[in-house]
Image 1 (tube, rainbow, N blue to C red):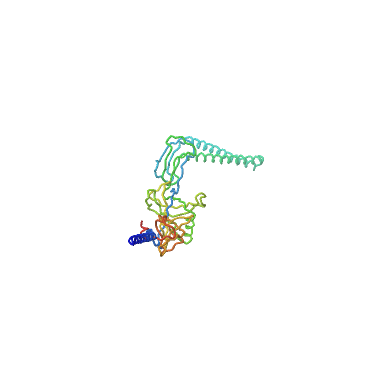
Image 2 (tube, one colour):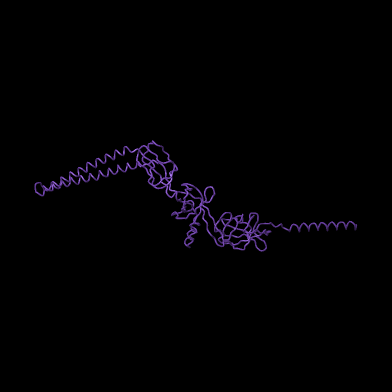
Length: 372
């Protein structure tokens, strides 16, 4: 009996020891190992890119101003032309005939006016000698005035005919490059027909839209005398940087109702004529920021339209903290308020943790994150 009692006692001891071991292992929670970075204040360059619409400083449609057949085409598509250079010729036989007729009428009324002037002199002499009544003098003066009015009318008609004749020779309004020529020689055209377009691309305009917040930041910077905001760069459609910098000149007068943005206009030099009217690209604004607190985008999560990060305290426990971003670039935010240099934040894996838990921090420098 004593032997069985000893066996039972041994089993009970082993069972209790096993339960104790299991309880101890259950209380030991495995801590998540997460990357943590310490916030620092750094001087940085903030780059912002905006899709832009590139336009020539001057881009004019060349249209016919009279009816007729297209007789001559003196230029080719893509050709550079000078101001006043002849571009097109419209058959002018009809307009030359109209001008000749108008000039003939003018000569006739000029002759009539001369005759009326001689008649006035003769009547004046006779009135002085009291040969004819004074009323004859008034009649002679009226005839001369009517003849002079006919001269004015005939000169106007001749000038109009000469102007229409000049419209048959179409010239370049300024130095530029010729666009597509849709019509061919011999085509019948009417007044207003599009013949081509001439673009002056020695300089170009780049139009781009910014938000109301960025618009206010721009104006505040200018008010402080910071003209660096005016300087902009241009990224071409293939991703390469344009070799010349531009300058913001002006902006539109009102915000777009649908987007809440406003259009800025920058001017870029184009000495090599690389940029064409209607091209695309991105305008890049570069701003120097002193002592900026930067956090990686992966450290940020949103709740109810607010931005949060997990701050790590001295006991390695995480706590949600709200902050207000000032700007965003690449994969980072610049902090406006809510976070201070020296604070530690979880920089990745924030979706897999909750407020108040303890973690095993794995230190990551901010410089290494910025260099990625």
